[in-house]
Amino acid sequence: MYHLSSVYMSLNIKYGFSSKVWRHPAPAGWYFVSLPRAISKEIREQFKFQEQGWGRLKVSAQTGMSTWTTSVWFDTKRQTYLLPVKAEIRIKEKINEGSSMKITIRI
Image 1: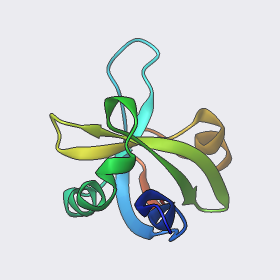
Image 2: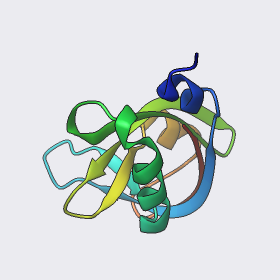
Image 3: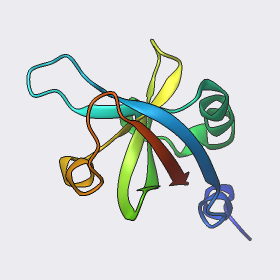
Image 4: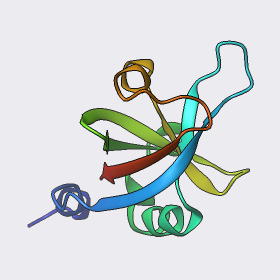
């Protein structure tokens, strides 16, 4: 017998989109991209049961030649998931605040 979450986890669902990088206004703020609302809505409907604290959902992300493991967080104010973009990735891919990124995430 399969447990529903293990079935979904093994599907490796892929979403591709473009989004601009923005920086959280806090001192030493993190850099993020916001997932499109339509994609966020679909992900939330299908995978909310896998979310951990603060609406966190584990994903792998890819842009350019870089892939990293991270989590997306659901932002209730923006009604979308936020994907953090690590400094290592920003440096390697020459990404700055305001840059447009093509991203693929896998759940």
